[in-house]
Image (tube, rainbow over all chains, first blue to last red; front, side, top):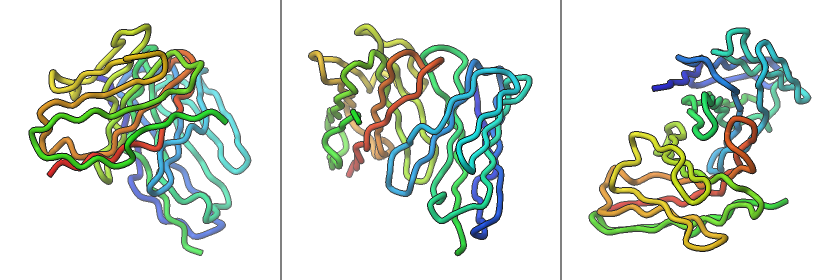
Amino acid sequence: GQQVMQIPQYQHVQEGEDFTTYCNSSTTLSNIQWYKQRPGGHPVFLIQLVKSGEVKKQKRLTFQFGEAKKNSSLHITATQTTDVGTYFCAGSSNDYKLSFGAGTTVTVRA
Amino acid sequence: EPEVTQTPSHQVTQMGQEVILRCVPISNHLYFYWYRQILGQKVEFLVSFYNNEISEKSEIFDDQFSVERPDGSNFTLKIRSTKLEDSAMYFCASSEQGALWQPQHFGDGTRLSIL
């Protein structure tokens, strides 16, 4: 079945630095979504990418969907303490099922 | 902003007992989902539900599990004969349309502890 892999599992970042988390699928995706889960919270939708090569930005977050629609990345610039949490990518190859990656847990050193 | 609500927030049950986890999806949403997250692990898809029937289910969702929409607002997950390994956070989610085009809105989850 479809598998979505995400690296790194943990990211320790100095406040103000940039970092990137990567997501790879074993199959071609129809779309990919990114979610953020704060400690003790529930996943919260950030963004959806649908088109090959698509790039979307939300303030300091840049999301990219690969040309082959099998990989994606999230790049955060100038990390802040509010960025703490686990970032999940989730891919869909059909209408009804999202396969989540293992997540990248981000901690920030002030 | 409308939200998905789940009850109870925490359920403690003896092994072998049945539990029912309840969810009220966002009112104009048509697609409903259950996910499981074992402590410290990733979110795992269990089942999706549309038009009063299961659309898709994962290998985790075996005969021990069932879902139901008993009325116009509730969406339930029943786990029969619970096992220790069923201990996890269970999230309900809903979306206006299928996952292909719409984000899913998650509830706060029910933490299920099996003793």
